[in-house]
Image 1: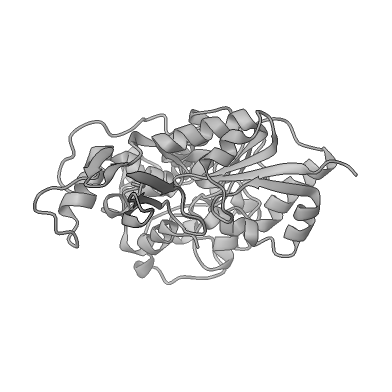
Image 2: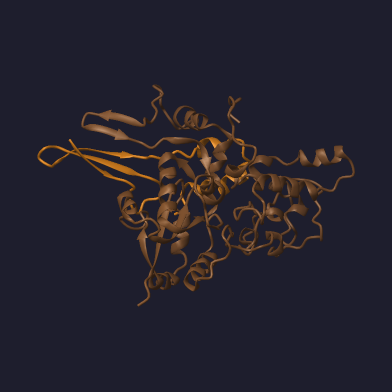
Length: 325
Length: 63
């Protein structure tokens, strides 16, 4: 009887969606169960840190780490998973590039805490109470992990072998990854397990060869033509610089792409790549005309870095926050 | 007092941690639920276009 693989799933600064994605492979989970034992999955089963610590180094065949690295427990978990796993997969957009939580990197951690605990309209906190790393209650001591200075992607903390992108990843690619493990046919280290082109290649909408943007408009100002390219109608879409493999799922559902599969090959800073991709398809004869059209884009930071701000070369907000924006 | 920590709480989206203090008789003296997570949705949605917010906040909980 060939020995079964050992799989582990570690969540961190995550929403749970990646673990639901695993469950979304439906009956294929039975094939996975034939192939592998799940030796650690605290979200689904009663595993705790001590169970992971007890696994010998390299005792996990493939570790799937989802969620961004947001606090010092996440850093500890990332290091543990790297130590215990022969192959470590950054599972989902957060692990790959910071994900939605990394939008917080436009502010300092203190700015985020100030909003959450002091200024949010629904919070009443006149004494400015904050969570403490250590706190004495009458019965003893309580502890909390420390938030890092910002959100990190997994490969900024440990070496990562593969990436399964998406927010959430799609069952077909999860299954493809498991099959590759089963057959012993893993691709070269560093591979992103998804398509190799841009979303535009899978997009069902009609567009001109070059895509031509003559204006940017908010959606309520557009007579939305469901057959025509979003960008050519003036609606921002990240398709040109986003890796495909998702079968243009959002576009099929009537929404423009927001880049959750991450960039195409050889791109580290997706926001920078998107900025250049979008600017290159703007139709303008003069610099002034180009500036005029690009200034119509209402939230470039949020469009270009929706899922990938942790990997931005621009770094993070360190200065004083001006106003509430 | 003896402290039992359940960390993380299984089958829960989002990190939750429970600290249970037992007295000498082994009965629960007190229990504390803690949320050891900070992501900052309340701040990083500020300034985003309103039509984008329904695409951002579902990532609070993917379940």
